[in-house]
Image 1 (spheres, rainbow, N blue to C red):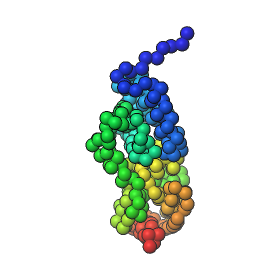
Image 2 (image 1 turned 90 degrees about the horizontal axis):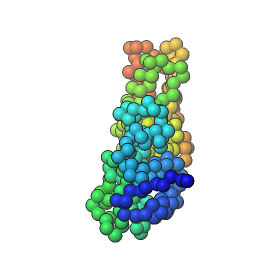
Image 3 (image 1 turned 60 degrees about the vertical axis):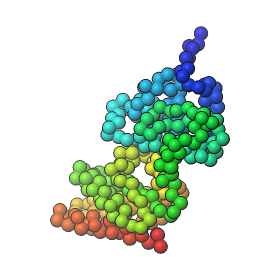
Image 4 (image 1 turned 30 degrees about the horizontal axis):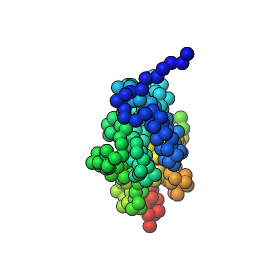
Length: 274
């Protein structure tokens, strides 16, 4: 005999109604093309319907949705918050276009992971819903602004000192590129942990609302460094620009080498804007 599932009676809609609403949402391209978004939303909706909303924490979601190991530490890795923000944006984009007449509105309040099920006629696009939608519209830029992130560089057999060089270089590159007109740069420290744990660049770009990312690699042979960089368009994966710098580097001129790399990248990106 099968187990009887008791759904939370405080929710105004029947499980079947919410199930049908999820099916409608998943037809939207934002969800249809992303397994993570569908899995994330399905998990938090089901847990809430079963009366387990109090268990929806970063750690639980990381293990159940993102398949992170038991040793996952939410304070050191913001990947759950990143995907939650992405899910909020996708839901609001859905309800502002395809789902504008849907009766059941599923939303996720900022700073929480418990979904809210509202009746469209009751909210009438109220203040909370509208303000959240407007806050997330910044990721869809129609002004020609390049939304860019510098991703961690790939190093061949790097030791600790070389990894520190690579991270410092990425921070400096981010600072140099943000000075360009019509270029908005996501802080490297924010992107770094997500990039390490999420090798799918399409998912990563969608999480941060990126239009482009700068990536590259570095090699070292004795005192000679070679750094290669590529600017990639997120939507098409087209390589729009590439640059390589090779130089003999000692402790005394490492900053000059980093400056040369940053100037090369800034010049290459600036030329694309013309």
